[in-house]
Length: 370
Image 1 (tube, rainbow, N blue to C red):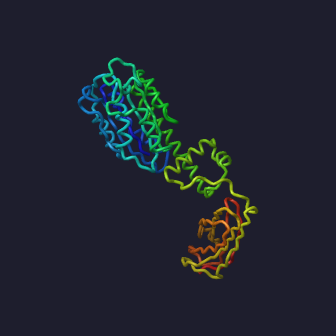
Image 2 (cartoon, rainbow, N blue to C red):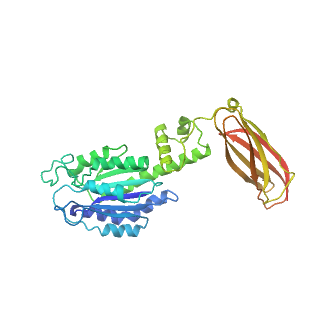
């Protein structure tokens, strides 16, 4: 998971920034302990204002790293200082976060904007001291930037806006509401920010866990299932399931949208002829096993072949593989089976062919292991 803090580092934000730094390790530990193998990278974009209002810098970009100590050090070095007029270079911070951070294509992405002053321009504020009433002098626009985030990264991008002053309530909420699932948090005390960050990341991690369950369901059904039935089995709404599948596609976890419910085998007319197994097989030595499959239907059919070896010592899987059959095809599948067992005894090899979750052919072969 890539997490970018886009932070106003003018003087009034110093307590909020310190609060995040002091609680960052605890936040990371809490999130990663809940999900196995979850890696979090943090990046920071610090923004202030354009000259002549602020002559130090407009933005600073610190690229993603998974080194929490380094992130805390970076945050500690932000050194908030007073700006000039009230509005700040919010749009510039968002632009740099989108274009200058090295977002991983196959990662879940979180962008947290944290500030206590609105963007420049009459569109976002009615404050009399705005030095740039026509908006960002670089031509960037905060709403357009968060919308471009969604265009660039799709449903893998989560956008959260944290306002640390009632002054930004209208403008920051407007920015959050400009994208689907954008969320605004109103935080009036510095100590509220770490808790908000924790809840934000926990919410995203819960979605990651849900996506993993959807992925497992997809793989177990070879990407062939009814949406309504799958949603019910996964305790999700159909809309939630479709959103999860969209994320998995964008992340490259799946390569295609799931097909609908498998056709009944009797309607497909698929015919399976299982082959022969030698009377004697040698442990660790591969032998060929042939299966002939006829698919007279006008649709691609995916079958799964599972072979297991049963001995007095237990059951072991020999193969579990999927094969796609072209429409109106008659195909010979040649499987390479390698029995692995420490015992040399009589055994039974079970071969079963599935279409979806339905068994279409099964055979038990008595043999001996040498």
